[in-house]
Length: 416
Image (cartoon, rainbow, N blue to C red; front, side, top):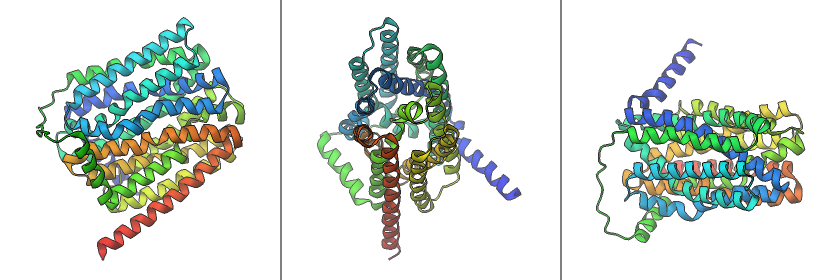
């Protein structure tokens, strides 16, 4: 037992070492506060869409519109980000996100927010995120002063995202029950002040820019070829894409589970989303203990299977308390599978291709999710939300077996 305690302290110390970098420390605390507001908006947007329409398909459509721009723009964004100042890009995208959240708030309190307007703003938020997500992923390298701290920063980033997922939805659910969805949009808009202040306070040394004489299309093809030629990168991206299409949309259907399946209200929705966050936060700390690429690959494959089993069990539950416990496992598996793939990619990719590869990760993770959102909304109309989530769980188990098989073949090729 003493060995385990020492190991845990060492893992925590390793994960926190990236906070030695002043710029990353500023980003961590500013972004953490902003993320809580973002999760409040996500839960409020989904709840409002379902309250206005009572339609599983239109609920899925909102998720589709908020993510589909990633499918088309993420690879191009990766090429452009290798030319642009990433901090300036993030300042622009965060300011745009703040404007959209405050616009939602204004429309809500004025009584003008209809479903078509909500859908339009969701699409604009998706366009903005197409550049924001790969910019933040690649900017980590510039914020961390020592390259050996990069793995720590990635693990801490994942923990930050899922820690906010634990707080934001639960607070959002209580706020919706007490004051309505508009207060979540307002608080989200104000929360961007913290991340913008941290970005302006950073001192970033001028990044050496390679003179880009080639056009965007050849560089995009080069990045695509680089992904295809690497079994490790290719297999990880394929598994993330499969999970995003079939597994991740379960969060889109949560308002239906909260109301129709578990017979609760917005507070129940908040607790369900928070339970996912608690499980994911545990996954973040677990993930921090794995620093070997080969071992991490096996853990990622197992995590996708855990995620699938958690979804199947959740789809069969009709008890709120049991569902909360099952979502802990689903959140854990989802976190280790997707964030572990992110860590693996960031570890093996060459620096000059990092933005392009991470844009393909954004395409697999966020760009494929809207297809899943639309598919899950349509299936929920036909076979019901529980059966849809159960089918997604089976698909995730198949994805884990696929990835484990690819990993085994890649290892055999290397040893041979």
